[in-house]
Image (cartoon, rainbow, N blue to C red; front, side, top):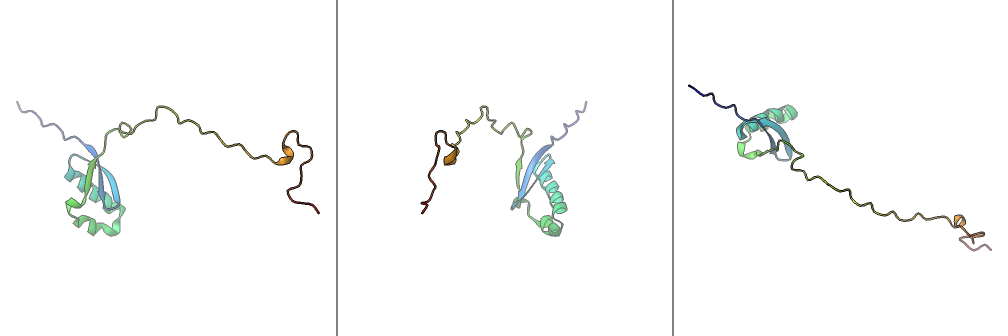
Length: 107
């Protein structure tokens, strides 16, 4: 009996060229680069000829985790609130002050 080959596992890759990065799906590094070339040509139409002629080693390909929140550390406790500084009050609104002196000499 012939066993069918398992389907290749499709995973997400982050493909970067220079300062530009895209996220694509594929089953290998080569498939991710091909998908990234297509997406980059759509996003940067004036550079299509440059993108298609780039060597494959110019592409930095890294797998993206299936659950991006799984690798992000979650804060379990809230940060303590910093005490606010007291607000300055005008002199005439202080309790017990009946007649405040003017800020400059009257003369």
